[in-house]
Length: 113
Ligand SMILES: [Zn+2]
Image (tube, rainbow, N blue to C red):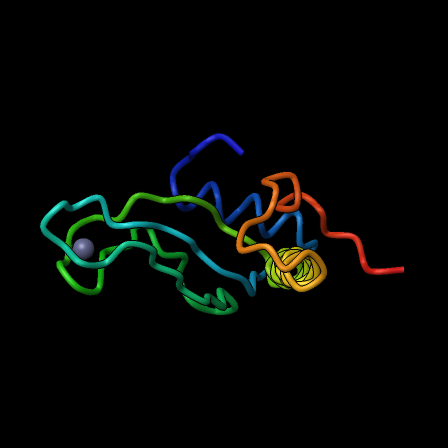
């Protein structure tokens, strides 16, 4: 998804979710080289609340750069996919006894059959 302003990203997620409100996550990162924060994730519920217009880094207070706005369903689906990839990497390492794995495994989110 092309980067847009936060209100457009929230509206697009709301449409994908199919409801008039949004339960989901804003993912952003702090670009301040002097700040120790890297990734910022905010779980949101825009039911009766006003949509946020910006995300500030909780550590340095600077404007964070937006990565994405995910619906709860998208977030859960992605978390489950990453868990399957992690398990496949662990199974490969245990099966081969190696300390490294091919990068292609990072795209393998199939369940063992
Ligand atoms: Zn920061």
